[in-house]
Image 1: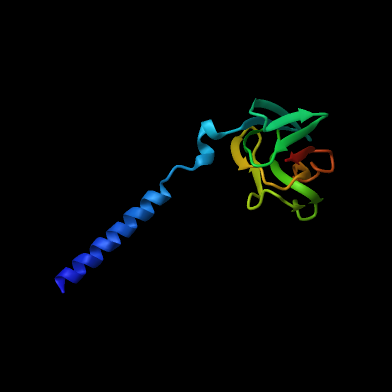
Image 2: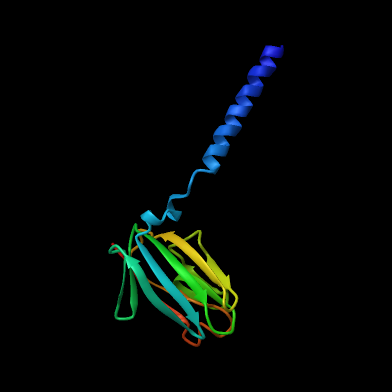
Length: 155
């Protein structure tokens, strides 16, 4: 009987150790050497300023449109400038009443909400859903005032 308890105990410890090792495994998207593009996004009063800091062919600004290559890992370094709270959404078919995009190729990512002066990093793998999208802010009156910027996902 004691041998059986010992075996069960050892199995439980082994399983917990394996689960712990799996949970603490590094997330690859946070390794700087795997980031294909880094884009600074400054959310100003009713607009987005973009600056591509790094790009291995994964991102380019062309005719005011941010082109992102499907399958690449992109880090957005987002700062809420100005004096009001902003949010950062990605998608298409805006629904300002619900404050979201009906078509979000980046699901399960929904949005970031930042107070004035705060910063956040968002690392995403660009989905394989080529098409025209945008980034937008749905704080009261912001989207209607033009706080959006076109994005195109290309293959």
